Image (cartoon, rainbow, N blue to C red; front, side, top):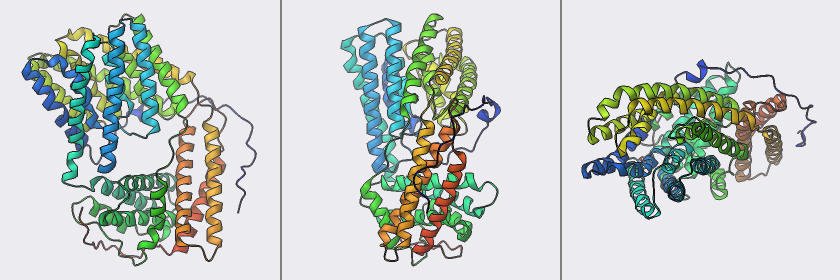
Length: 561
């Protein structure tokens, strides 16, 4: 048993200059399993208010209803109990940012002041979305709504009515987002559990030592952690279906701890059954009973993990980058500096390497998008109905494509944003194309330079803290293992604490590895901590007697979705 006190840290060194890859950032991936859900939801949310306003001849008000309708893009991976809370929070957050922007626009026409307000709002939205782990599309939609509203002529007397329109559309978006619960109430939990089983099967197929086992193990542990978060956020009164799903996630955890003893075919069969509409597969193992869920009950009481660390550098980067991008756009005489501001806000990811990749994706997608807009503008100018239909088509296309790669979705997002500016009346296509292209380049260059200027010097410190946490969790698990009278609850809780610490270590180490201009990370210590931690996890699994039986059966219990 090693001490929890880390060995002396090597002298700080500066990392060598990074290469800036281009092709990798543009590589297409597989579409999301549920790509059609946000795509259909946003169409169902945007269409009724927009078509109604077009019929009434007040399409100029559609930008306010669009703000509420876009809330339907969020929380599609959340269980419905959690989705109800998250969507309500998104709607309230959207209304708060929109209110601040509309009031600012009504009080001053000074563009510099408005850009500054937009940058502060963007930083706050980025910090809140990351701290609460909101998920896609994150802060970008909220920043787009508030930044665009800053540059719409406004009076204080108009603000309540415009907020009312956004709120009404937000309520409709909430209803659209919750509607699938009537058909498949446990759908999100089933998908999360299926993903955990599939990734566990991929790791088990390596035997824990084969090619790519390290990356497969990290992906599987992250998927298992997400599955637990999904199940635990669904409420404190689990149904029969929920308990069956929990047992399957335990099976995935067991496969990760002892991959050589796991059966990948059986894990995949369970995952396939979960993606259908039939009963939840049962583990068909007498040991997969109430005892192994004691740790689940304990974690349900303690709640979810704390918020993310390292938010300050991201918030500062966002505020500085958005402000400078907006000021640069104003200096160039562009009439819509919020485009540059939103471009900068969309760049900032967990580290500089990811931020560079997003910068490449944003530039390529936006430039292709302005060309697409130029091609469809004559159709959109045929009338209000044609304009709304074009917006709906691009809304669907953006969500259908963005899971393949961000740049591909941006090809549709860009013409959608340009078409929204025409709700108040037709614009000159050439001017819109030129200004959007210039603002994209300005926002990308200035935003990335700001990210380079604001370094995250504490990334290495967070890795050190995670190493200490892993050592302590491993020692705690070892103490429980050494006690022949240890209660099942203590053993299961110790195992889950260690698994969580290992996931946090891998996530933090990956994020820190993508930061530039910092001291060298203790990579060898990270590898050793992970190796010893996973050995301890395997020991706890064997002590609990949770190793799965061989076989590939997928018998089911009478638990309906």
